[in-house]
Amino acid sequence: MSFWRYYIPFETIVIRETQRYTRIWVQTIVPPAITMTLYFVIFGSLIGRRIGEMGGVPFVDYIAPGIIMMAVITNAYSNVVSSFFGAKFQRHIEEILVAPVPNWVIILGYVAGGVGRGLLVGLVVTIVASFFVSFRIHNLAVVVSVVALTSVLFALGGLINAIFAKKFDDISIVPTFILTPLTYLGGVFYTISMLPEFWQKVSLVNPILYMVNAFRYGFLGQSDVPLAVAYGLIIGFIVVLFCFCLWLINRGTGIRS
Image (cartoon, rainbow, N blue to C red):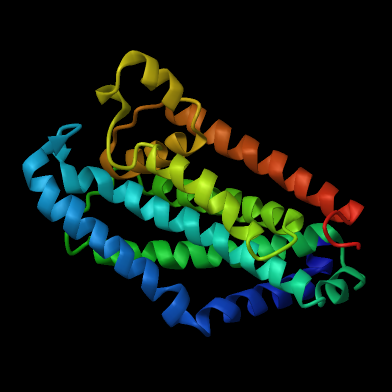
């Protein structure tokens, strides 16, 4: 009952966040679609023909789930980090925090906005991919649940980044030096079975590997990691990051000057 009591403020934040990125869709939706199209053209159509198959399927089919997931991760993260930091920078975050609304509702509102953008971009990239890939979905429930949970996870990550950020440069440090390397090394373009045994074990430390492979399992029915482990890791991270976000906002970290 407590959630429905605060549904209107939650809905208000979600609508504002949604309008924020749909109003400038040329900057938020089109660029990822163009970038991912280039990935399919270069890595799929051109290089993929030389590589042939990977994991028993055409190379372009193998990398398609990873490319879609990469777009979802990037946009879910960037939407929240830029929006929340913008609210801090423009000094209107205080108007939300002093309202009679629990902080967990505020977190859910921002996260829902990031998830919306991540899923929308993922859908657009999937449509683009359909021109290059013959999609066959092995398990639709896995596809939908993994992409939704992953969007939630990285939206929370973007919120944490925004909380600690003190200037605009700070919101690009994590995506540039942490998120992008982990994504490219997360099995998007290859199977870890191709790596030496030592590097296979190192790759298993990368959490994005589990998300990409779980998503790939939903399409192709194959994964480098156990599906149950991937779900456990994603859900576990969501719980930890949500609790951490709530603790930070309750303390006023990065907000009270």
